[in-house]
Length: 73
Image (cartoon, rainbow, N blue to C red):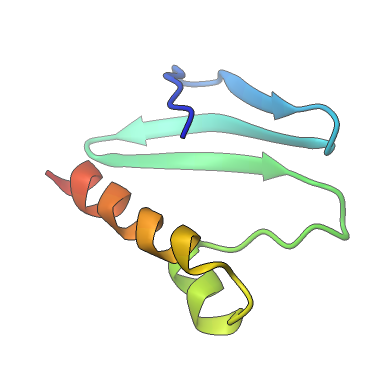
């Protein structure tokens, strides 16, 4: 996993995919993100993706929840 640090109003870009993620605001332990993606790309919060899409690899599901627990501590 690649881990990047970004400040408010900075962006991470996936140019080949046409996707960008911008840090809009940070407040306490919350981060507000803005995501630009083509209309044919589904963008879901992690907990919703696992409820609605049973085709996701188990490794993605297993790796997502430790990050949430780590961010809360």
